[in-house]
Image (cartoon, rainbow, N blue to C red; front, side, top):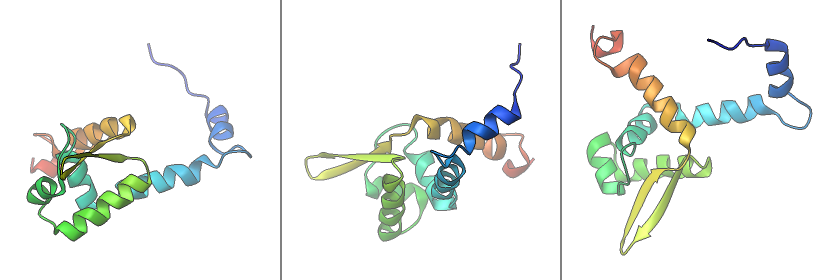
Length: 117
């Protein structure tokens, strides 16, 4: 059974005087809105990776990857931890896991238009 959605209630919660949710939502989506950042998130989706490992899979320079990671860290989307001399990056926001999965199903999965079908 699907729940009915009351759009008036949603709008009131989304744009209340004490919390500007549309601004926060837009900033969150901007953080995800770069092809290399999306690739980066796909790479670390299954676990921690170093900048070098991410660089290898994404195909961007180490400097570029570091800048993207800094942007994602500033939005609390990605976190890091030190393991000896290595710094390992992982997804810290559970919401991102669902979004990346949704985007994969829509644009990358076999049988979708973006996958060449």
